[in-house]
Length: 242
Ligand SMILES: [Zn+2]
Image (cartoon, rainbow, N blue to C red; front, side):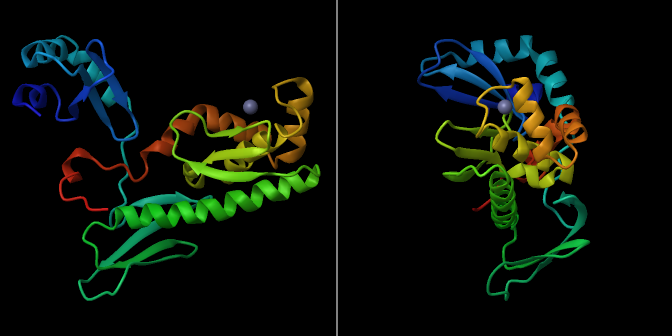
C-alpha cells in the first residue's frame, strides 16, 4: 500500500481487479478493512485522489463496525451461549495445538505463536457438530429428510435451505445466544416444508423454536456482532501463518 492511502486510513487496502471497470470502495466488515478496488489499468494518482475524496465515508464506515475481539489471551468469547475466557499457553516444545472447552474457559496449549487459525478450525468443528445435531433433531419432529448440513462464513445470510433439502448455516452462530442459534436452525428446517415466508411457515417456525420471538429479535438487532470475533486486525496481519 502506498503511503498516501495509509494516511487516509491504515485499514484501507488497494485491490486490483481484472473485472472492475471503474474505481470503487468496498467495506469488508469481516476483516475490518475498506478495499479500494481498481481496474487492472489504473493511475495511482487518481486512486489516491478518489480515496482522499471519500475519506470521511471510509472512516465513518469503519468506525460504525463493532470493535473486533481477536482470539487473544484473556479475550471473552461467547461460545454456545456461555461466555468463555480464552487462556493460551504457548511453548515451543508443545507437540501440537490442543484446545479444550469447559464451562468458563477455552484453553489452548500450543506451539504456534499465532494459533488463531487453529482456534477457528476448532470452533468450526464444534459448530458443525452442534448445528448438525440441532438440524436433525428439528427435522425429525416434522419427519423431513435433510440431504446435508454445510457450514459457511457468510456475512449477511445466516442460513439457507435448498429445495433438495440442503441446509447451509454460518459457523458464527456458535457465538450467538442459544435462542438466536435455535431460531435460525428452526427457520431453515421450517423451509423444508414451506419454501416461503407465509403465515404457515412462521407458525411452523414457532413450533420448532424454543423462543422464536427473542431469537429473531436478537438476530435482527445483534446479528452483525457475530462478525467481530476472531477478526484479524491490521496490526496483526503480518506473520500470520495458517
Ligand atoms: Zn427464510
